[in-house]
Length: 124
Image (cartoon, rainbow, N blue to C red; front, side, top):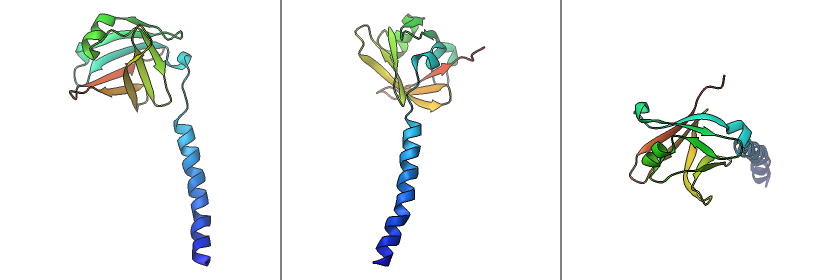
């Protein structure tokens, strides 16, 4: 009985730490926080990249023809989620979900295993 009580009491701090850690890792960034200049490019081929601008109204500007060539469909908007940044088509449906990879960099692996990075340009 005493062993069960010790295990139960030991599990409480672990559960609390896990809940706090999970809650803090799923903070939804605002569109204003992600708005700005970004580069979309194949991993290991930055020269083949596209310059994109994400605006706070969640519309996408820049070299959209280049982006279409990389992801297979033309994006026109974007949407932040707690752990991804989605590029949207004209009807608002998600085309791709870029996962957080590093600070300021999101990563998408296409079905044929092509890796694309979406990297924020430095704010000045």
